[in-house]
Amino acid sequence: MENVVILGGGPAGCTAALYTARADLAPLVLEGEPSDDILPGGQLMTTTEVENFPGYPNGVSGPQLMADLKKQAERFGARFEYKTVSSVDLKKYPFIIYVGNEKIEAKSIIIATGASAKYLGLPAEQKFLNHGVSACATCDGALPRFRNKPVVVVGGGDSAMEEALFLSRFAERVHVVHRRDKFRASKIMADRVLTHPKIVVEWNSVVEDILGNDKEGVTAVLLKNMQTGQIREIPCSGYFCAIGHTPNTGLFKDYLELDEQGYIVTKPNRTATNIEGVFACGDVQDSYYRQAITAAGSGCMAGIEATRWLESKE
Ligand code: NAP
Image (tube, rainbow, N blue to C red; front, side):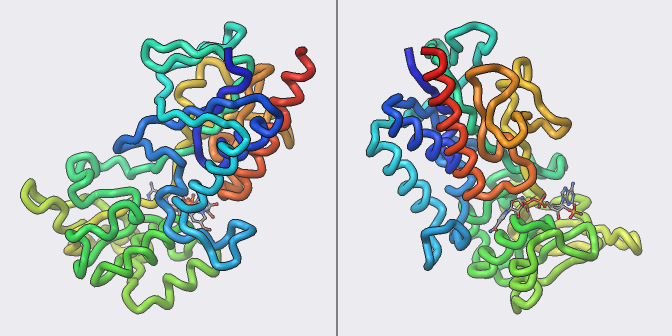
């Protein structure tokens, strides 16, 4: 039986692993198998440059930061496995985690499953997924199909700014489509976009449809101006959706208290959930800060809380 099973290997999961490993609990971290939907290591794996994680005065790439966090936890005995959890039973104790037919028993669980990219819900997003449609410029932006061609980014938050700035390295022109006349993004990121010579902002606009064909994938988007109702076609080879994220809480909805957006509810200023021995940290329980450093901070809290809870039981 495992002392602590940590679900998710992003900054929250890795930091929870570091703390529980240093408490001699030999945590098991289940990261998920690499696939189109899952990139073990969390959202930082698709982030180019992280400039706001303390301790890296010159910035660090997302994958490098994740490699460092993982290595630090492994040094103290944390075990990382690429396994995708199919279901959990949190009504039984010890808790049960199923990975296909494999059954893992755990005295405590730390949930750090993060959040996934949202799409607008247009049928063409599915049709052209990986054929010009993406929610990750860092993963796909350097592909030949986007080089020296116009591309479109949807959204007005920091993610959209980051995607647009990254794409501007390769694309001929980046159109940022935002439904309002003001960005939600932080001022520093918004200013970089607004002053970039290759980026054009399409204010008060929404994507009505994505056009393309089987051979070429995406070839254009139809934009509707919300104020005038005018519809315009913008030729492009790529459509990048950057409108936020949904917490990955589907596995836990029958057991844990979730808020109206689906985030796990934890005790005020804590990581304890409504089930004793189950803790949640990082983006799966934080709809407000959603930063790598706050995820790591709450991973530390979850590691300490799980350790103290296990001590109190023994
Ligand atoms: P976000 O801040 O929630 O922004 C989402 C954006 O998408 C908003 O501008 C929103 O428009 C727009 N949007 C949402 N649904 C839409 C829809 N159906 N149609 C059209 N537009 C839609 O999400 P985020 O940008 O992913 O950022 C999340 C958090 O991570 C933030 O706290 C952010 O600061 C942080 N973050 C930081 C960095 C960084 O510092 N480098 C990078 C990425 C993310 P409205 O503005 O009209 O609501």
